[in-house]
Length: 211
Image 1 (cartoon, rainbow, N blue to C red):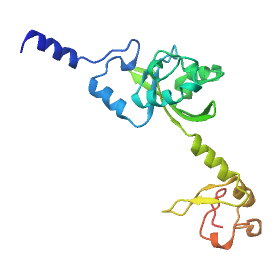
Image 2: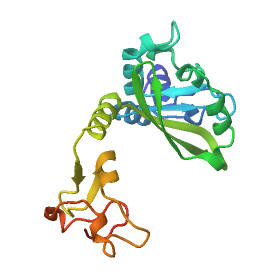
Image 3: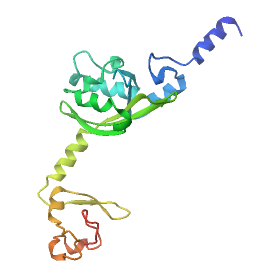
Image 4: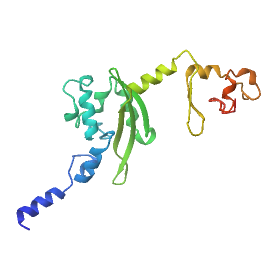
């Protein structure tokens, strides 16, 4: 093998580096794996809250949301930006992330303009540190939440159940109000439950007793 070929091979095998990041040493294979994930993934520095990595899915999704971000911010230049670009008033997020051991993992749904984003934040340990970086997986859930709100506001009683166990998983707000329970349970006060007889084999979403 020539010296030039050996140098090229060593360069190709060398992990990529990113200053100050847990992902500072990452092989091309690992990077390809992260970029191939069908979910949005970002990492940020736990001290500066600067974004240190964005996988390809995140960059593509951010390009679609660029009109809702501060001027000039998009998927191509999100690395190096502060997480503040996602929040109108970032003080709450900064206080929460300032103590990751106490507050993580964290789940939230935030609004970005007309869009709703579901966030899952967790700490990434590194080199003996409990928190070497903060990792965020996120999804645009606007349509899901809109549908959920629409079903919740329907003027009729609606409940959804697990197709295998037949246990009620999501009663609407109206259905929950109609199924009133005493402090003991519906079995001792059956007249307080307005659930129809056809639901006799289901369980109350509040007290878990059979209606």
